[in-house]
Structure formats: C-alpha cells, structure tokens
Image (tube, rainbow, N blue to C red):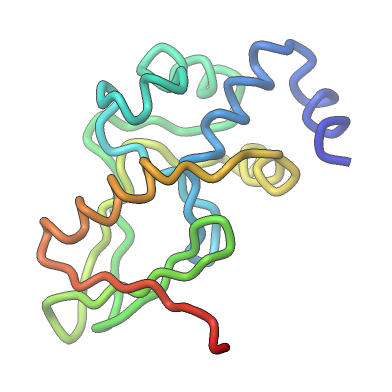
Length: 148
C-alpha cells in the first residue's frame, strides 16, 4: 500500500521523493512531528530538505511552515517521543508547564495521513543531532532499551 497511496496523492516522482526524504525527520509524540530546527543545517540539506523544498511541500498541502517555529507545551517532568518506533525519554528541568520546540514545520492532516504510509529510512546522524540539541537545552535524554 505505501508507494501506491503516495503515488495517488503525489503523482510527481520528485514530490514523492521529497516527502519521503522529509519523513526521515519525523518523531512521534501522539502524532507525527517533523523536527526541522534549522532549514540551512547540513543534516537536512544533504537530504534535499531546505527552505525551497519545505515551501514546495507547503504548496502541496502537506506541511505548514512557520519561520518563528512551533512549540508543544503543557508537559510534566517527563515525556517520551518515538523515532522509528524506538522510545526516547525526556526529563525536563521543571516539574510542570514544560514546552518542547518542534522546529519550523508541522504536518497537515493530509501530510499526517501520507506519513503513515510513507516508506522512510531511519537517519542516525539526525537522531544524534536532535539528542544533542535537547541535551544542550538542559534536558536529560535517555533511550529506553527493551528487557532481555
């Protein structure tokens, strides 16, 4: 189903490839969240995700772009986000009313539906980039490994 569904929504092969590239930057916290923090950073640019690409995806109705960025709030002391089904626990500095910077991009409803069937590959360099960013913001970040 994945490729066929994407082809129905995005008949242009370049647009399909662009959206699939974006999907490697998606974390999940209740909903899919593309964490695009710096549109000029090489971690994104080397995979074709830059301002022009994001504007193209916005014109296709798949994402919303905001230069000032998006924030998700009302977190308690801890939360979990998933990157390619692997959980990462975040411990914030405060006990309550914490916010998480989501970067400059959100998926639209159409984009969320498409991301659910998108075939994307995990990007270890991007994962480490995000973890380092959260660490520099004072968060305690840990991977949750399955019991053996």
